[in-house]
Length: 198
Image (cartoon, rainbow, N blue to C red; front, side):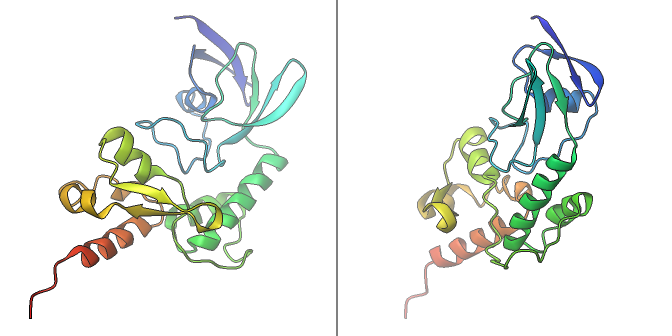
């Protein structure tokens, strides 16, 4: 397998062919924030927090580092005024949905994000997709899925599958950055219980 030489934050690093910029940075000990990334899952690029600036052929562009492949001679900047501003706004939008999420609050502190900048919509699900993808890709159960689209999009358990599979699993619970998943499961579990006959 050929080795690729590139720079991240002025540091020379080497990458393996096929690695993402995020993977290369992490191997080099360079922190890039993520919310929807998990090494066990296919890269998703949904949260956009891992956005970085890359320069190739004299051009600079912003890319999502978890899905952008390392290339020979690539120059990457993980922090700049523009990148920090983008991350700050993204975090503020996420915190409008989950204002008490410890993970979001910790990240928000790094980037100076204000939890109250946008009108609150405490739906608590930030659509990172970790639970849905984990259930599908790792467990191959499809007990959780997205329903609806746009601002109405939310996760939902499939009651027939969840009733049989989730009680003994719950491996997706610690992945949820807002604890919404646990609340959704409790609701589905309560609704699926049989009421005693009169």
